[in-house]
Image 1: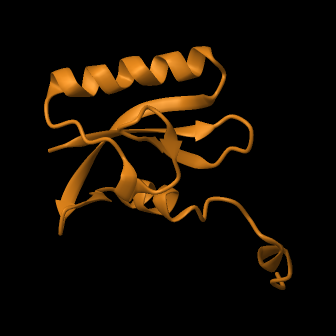
Image 2 (image 1 turned 60 degrees about the vertical axis):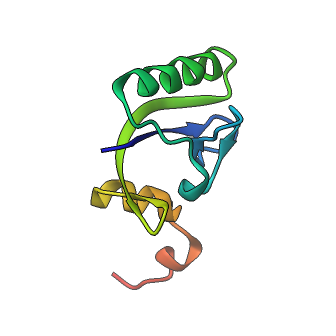
Length: 97
């Protein structure tokens, strides 16, 4: 299975993915794919520099599937993170208990 590297952007907590140009993007579809363990280690090395620069936190590699040429998160947790719906909005507070 291919891997991508994900993290949270330090300035706002948004879920991001390491892109082929070394930048961090919010779209899983634009993530840098690693097909081997060696390539995954390379991505993790690039990500470690971003952690040291205090650009991202909570970095880790995650397995993805490729559907129609686009990476797709395998786990429910990662699908939720990729949807960027991990924070409560005002609508949640308006729901009667």
